[in-house]
Amino acid sequence: SSQMDSFRSDVRRLVDHLFRVEPFASRKRDFNVRAIDTPADLEGISRPRAGVFRKTPLGTRYNSFDSERYVLTLDDRAWRDAAAVVPYDFVLILVNERKYGGGGIFNLYSTAAAGSVFAPYLYVHEVGHHFADLGDEYFTSPVSYEPEPVITVEPWEPNLTALLDGTELKWGDLADD
Image (tube, rainbow, N blue to C red; front, top):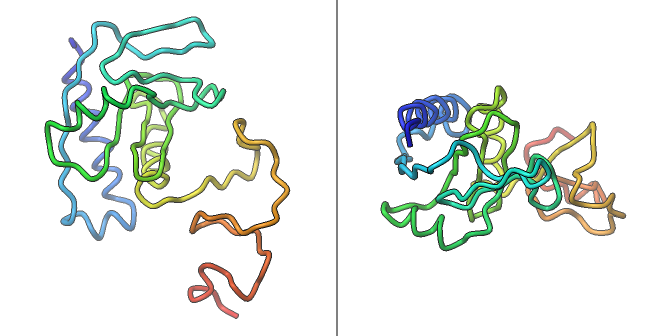
């Protein structure tokens, strides 16, 4: 609770960054942003693999889906009760951590470690999952919570393709023949 000024500064910094990135930059006037103060007794969130456990107002924690960097909350009531104090369509949860981590669930919420040096990138990335239903495009490593798939159907995410049928490319109207 002694770090609320830092929280508000992180909110301004990350929201300002989001609105410098398209498509948000050109649509900034279509958004209202509100920050909700949810102070905790202790700094940081739970990190089960490190043996660190914190009772936080929203129940956020690392190690979701057995991924060290995946931050989610399983306390649905806590985050919804906090969010209910203002009208909302999208919920973006900032956690008081420097360790890289975040997560985004389509049409539910996204999370990001506000103190990470990668926070601006991470914030936009996780908003993409939550707001736009975008899938991960990892080229250098597999996603740790999913086995390597044998792809037999086209992925449902609008930005991913297995190119199973080149004539039905999802973004074919944007590609040159």
